[in-house]
Length: 163
Image (tube, rainbow, N blue to C red; front, side, top):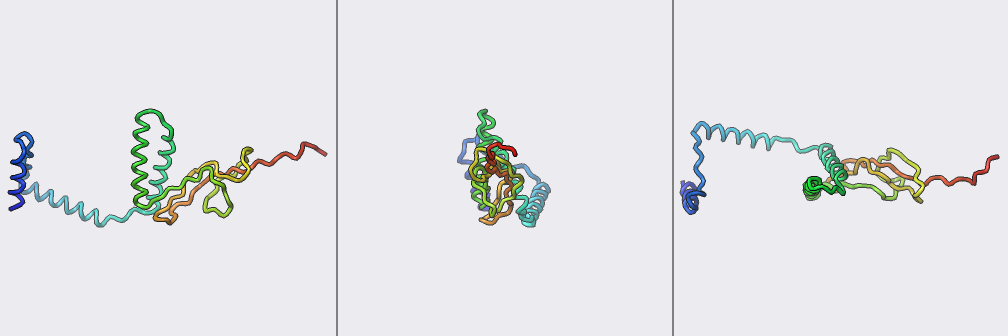
């Protein structure tokens, strides 16, 4: 009862034009609303946590979208890029790290799935030339292995003599 008086007093402090009218709910509507809130509460408490594979899939889709929009010049693309960055910041805060492997030197002991080795005449060491799927980590533990294309130095010619 005291809460109701406090609410009425707060409303009276405002100009008449800015006062919020009390909702005109009948008792059966209020009961339905309470039931719906109880059902929602039950669903939220009984919901299973997001699986690691679902989380990795979502983080990968976000990574791909950010790469697509990188360097975009139109206003809508820049705005979308800002939203995607905010989403990535939220994932970072939750302990989800997305690792892109582009241009890093490649070693055979790395925890990466190599989809293709290709000759690259400009390289002097094996190097990741493209990340197809990033590695995803959840609180430091890998939940998705990255997939990459590795460039390797092209074989030099032997002088061109035929015997």
